[in-house]
Length: 131
Image 1: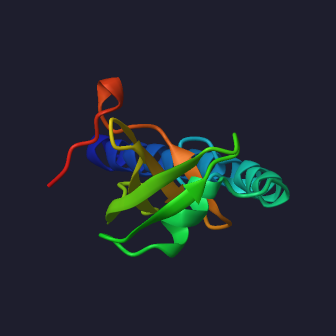
Image 2: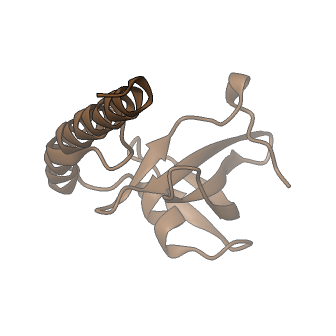
């Protein structure tokens, strides 16, 4: 076999091995956004839990709308849907600002395909960049 042809065969085999190993990882949910079988289990667990009242508000409200939300603690607060956007993961996310006039907070909720769940803030300190 000629040296140039041999190198081309080795490269082709290495590429095929890499493709097969990455395909196996995606099936197991390693390093993928879809999550594989593990994501199915998490989605089933999410279905068993009732949705957070703020998450329910985020799922039903349109950007710019407001309403009163009774938290799990029993406290009723004003809620305002600041914005809706698609995260880098492809999930739809919505930012809700809530609280009393002197003490407001914001929380991001994202749709995981089953229900809306709280997501981590985009920036350190809980701040979320706004356009």
